[in-house]
Length: 247
Image 1 (tube, rainbow, N blue to C red):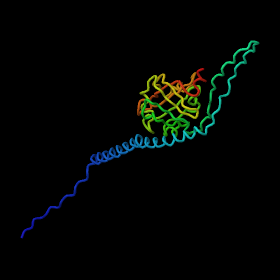
Image 2: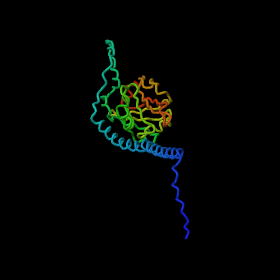
Image 3: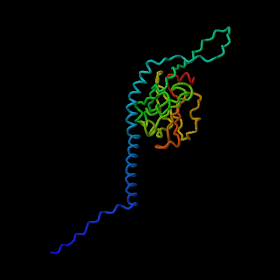
């Protein structure tokens, strides 16, 4: 009886080096894509959620700060004494008195900014003292060494446009004539937008003092880029110190 010999089955050949390389590259791209999506989600969603929650707490902290911060009249300016005359003249009305508040501590929420024409900011966003990474991740920061809101000079406030709550996301919609309100321990200071412009990050002149009382808002431009800065200039038009500054 004859038997047919069974031929042994050959083992599969290992993939070619090029095939292994392409497979590894494919998996690398998949992992990189997932990491990128996770990073975008964290930057646009998680940081915004955290900043919105922090803002609720900071608004309450700012309102509590209003109650305890010292307020005092500004030191009187040196003015010459008017000459005395023999004739009786009516006493002039005393000029309006400028009131000031003590400088806020670093990182402290000390003001609330509202922009009625921007829904996100209509209810108010807390402003903290400082513009470091720690400060701006909670929303808006006041630049130290610039005037406080409601005081003579140029109060500069910065904020993110796309992450950490993106409080200034729609800042480019502001136009001359729009109103910005800043509440501090002194009361509510009303500013009117005079001009908006796009400048280089190196144009530091936008933070310099100006005659009168001004508010300057700055943020990155365009959205999702730090290549330029969007700047809004607004002038004080009402508030506790308006008469004293513009008399």
